[in-house]
Image 1: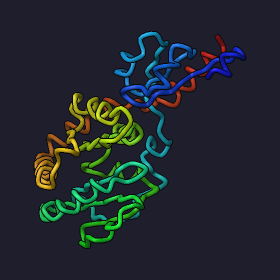
Image 2: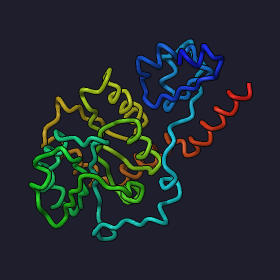
Image 3: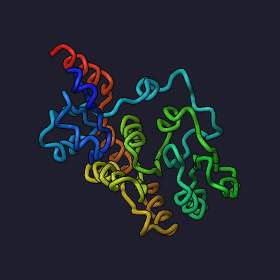
Image 4: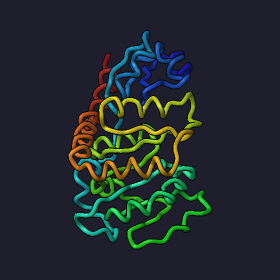
Length: 250
């Protein structure tokens, strides 16, 4: 940033989170523009040139994943719960899910659980309606099939959930810098697109009952999915590219 300023070069920051990080807050006013993933972030950057563009996602999230169908053994028509903890997985969430899952199976749901590769008990649950994988490459098709997601609330994960219109139970990572995942989750909760459960107060019983309540309320799930879609900015990449072009041409 400092080098660019010294050379007279334009600079654009992209801030995905609902609360900007320290670097963005400090250098934002020096930028030609700050592109925001969430409109609410602007209030933390009062002296910057803020433009809300959303956060870009990979193209397969936008085209219905037509060329990459879901290749998991999940019957048509059954409820599907997708659990993922972001790029690192989430061992604490994994444990709660395994303790809760039997009631979800009894309700007819299937669970695809992306455990990450750091959970020593990742293979401890065996059930015909349960698929545990460290990671899964075709997240677009998986989320487009999902009935409900249980997820951390990193900006990338939330963007994918919104674009796919997936209702979610969000469990913010409690040790994220400046608790930014809670701020992200708050955007979705206030919009009616998700429920937020704080890990410090969460038990398997609470998680189990919240999931069952939603599975038994298809109208509520549909409403949450619609509100998630309303948060999405499907043309985010185009908006960001246009902002960069404008900055260059100024």
